[in-house]
Length: 272
Ligand code: NAD
Image (tube, rainbow, N blue to C red; front, side, top):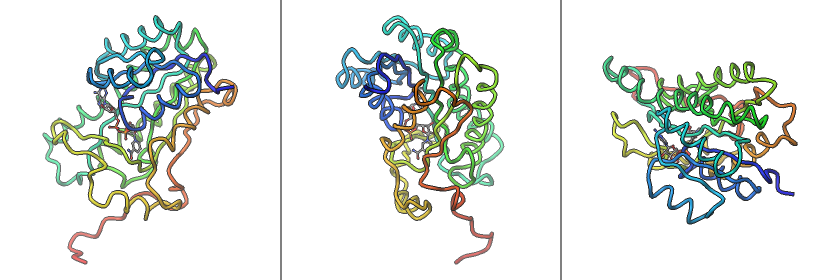
């Protein structure tokens, strides 16, 4: 039987990348899935792919009302909420700390943490009553940047490290009703975007040499595709597979732990 038959789920940032791969896999496993997406065209594309098995809501994860609307839509359409996947995120493109002015740090912190951290907290709070009613679970998207330096700049890495605390605190507070876990992907071929204040048009998959750099850094030797992580979300979401699992953060990063994080920076003045 499909692993998530009869489940109702909600994925934020599900229009593309890892969120879309999770949504597609959840549908393939029998779930019906709500999606919080940015644009009408994102919602139309999801309906074209999955018709009435998806319920997209156009909104912004930084908005409490939009998170509530997304949860209410899933409950109204699919009769409850079994799994919540807070996933929408933005990247800082590894700008060195010393290259940021004080005012830039102030502005970019507010923007990045509002999506990467506040967006996750608002989604979890909006889904709380429905998840408690179903004795469901939350599966956050974390990152190898939740554990290692060098996979982003200080703002991104701080935000993803902070989410380790989010997983642990919520797993502690919401037990035994709601299991709270996470998947921590490493470098993945997506169009992860940047901060509006720093030029929103940049995309992760356009960084020159990104694929080769990831392939060289991780023991398994390749850049992940979004689909490579999706099975772990299914496993953590499944009551059958993960009944005794909470506060777990599963790396899906090609083995970074036995290699360490990103590249070391050259000492100042080293022109080699
Ligand atoms: P992506 O850009 O393909 O997906 C991110 C989604 O979030 C997009 O659909 C975007 O529209 C949405 N989003 C951004 N801001 C939003 C907002 N304010 N409101 C609603 N939606 C918003 O990138 P991705 O790589 O699939 O990123 C998904 C998650 O995976 C992020 O949390 C990211 O930090 C994490 N991650 C990515 C990688 C990687 O190498 N790509 C590695 C580790 C973790």
